Image (cartoon, rainbow, N blue to C red; front, side):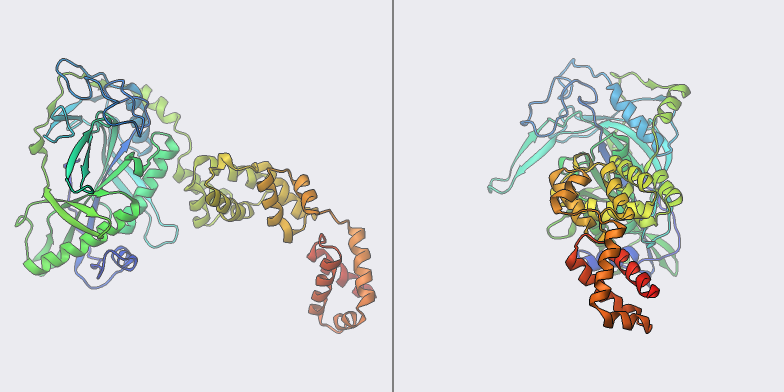
Amino acid sequence: MSDKVSNPTSTPTHTPASNAGSDAAGNSASNSASTAPYELVIGLEVHVQLATQSKLFCRCSTRFGAEPNTQTCPVCIGLPGALPVMNREAYQLALRTALALHCEIPAFTKWDRKNYYYPDLPKGYQISQFDLPMSRNGWLEIRDPKGEFAPKRVRITRAHLEEDAGKSMHDEVAGRADSRIDLNRTGTPLLEIVSEPDLRSPREAKAYLTELRLLLVYLGVSDCNMQEGSLRVDANVNLHIATPEGTIATPIVEVKNVNSFRAVERALAFEAERQYEAWLETGQRKGDVPKQTRGWDDQRQITYGQRHKEESSDYRYFPDPDLAPVTITVEQVERIRAGLGELPAATRTRLESDYQLPAYDADVIVNQESAFVAYYLAVADGCGDGKQAANWLTQEVLRLMNERNWTIGQFPVPASGLVELLAAVKSGKAPATRAKELFGAMVDGSLALDAAMERLGIAAVSSSEIESLCRQLLADNPRIVADVKSGKAQAAASLIGQAKKRNPNVNPNDVRATCLKLIEQM
């Protein structure tokens, strides 16, 4: 938990929601500009479990789902005489993340003990970083492809390494209210990413978390699975209220126990309303009440008081005497920076500029896994039409992936197969009206295009066959020919329906064009 929360002031823009638990209220608190004289100020602390096989200071496994207290050792449970040794991979993953967040990387960083007592913290302290974190002063750009808020850079105060605590399991269902402790998570490597209070609405907060998660997954530093505790969010929130005497800031509240990005949005909307109503009732001034930590009850859609919010002095930080400081050279930093590859924001920009995609399409594609972007690029380059490729991927491919719970790596039609289908439609080899049916057959049977066409009885129709068919149609429909000659070109539409009945493989556009050409020659 970070202890730095500043309170910048700016022009009031937001109002409290009438019912923050509802979607309407969430949208109101996120986006509505009205006359209520306050501004919502939000800073986020994100704890990310790094994708290492072992813990931060010992060799115990970080595998999720093991029997309680089976992944522990004298180091992570703090037995006397056990000494920690830093996991180098955890530091390198943290460094990749910090560089992707444009952070400054100091040449020297150290470890500190953060002292507090809780049943799931067996040592009585947590190894963390205080005054000399491994990175600081970065930023992450967020934007809304729907244009509901302007793009902005959210400043990153710091990103630092620390070990996780254990897990308390409260058995309230059985009626005994027993609590048990699982220390498997104790010592798991976390990267805490602390933002400045630059966010001004629940929607911006959700966009920040979505973009941050996407970046972390692209980098391969974490799976960011919130259900397994790989990504956890604490939100610091207060209001700046305009009064005749000047701007008054309500006490900062840290909201915890938020288990989804949508829940973060709802919790912030509720908390904005709650703080404003509390201020209206009491007329409180900053300092009249202490900072507070509140939990989020997702079932009741409310926050509830837990305890007073601690300050850094409460934790009695001091340097850990058992761990050596970490040093790094400029050359090492640049080597890791060079290996980051293209990050999501840059990919988005490239799709918009080089492939002429709308911001929304680019966002949908990039917000999948990096392999999905590679699949798109292969299809777009192969068919020569970025928008057509985007339409197929964001509609047909994503629909099937969601229905069948596939990743793009499991998708049975390779990018080259989709390119072949699009080329066949363009050339007339496959009818456009049956393209989706063909694609479905390719997916269901893991078939190449020709095999799918054979299974569906689809055969290419030559231009001479189309011309012969059209001559028969014109001979059988003299009235339609007369209507077209008199200027009613739309009358030819019925000829297309007849053509499809005689040969379902014909291309309707080819039939129409051929019929009109033959009528013109009569």
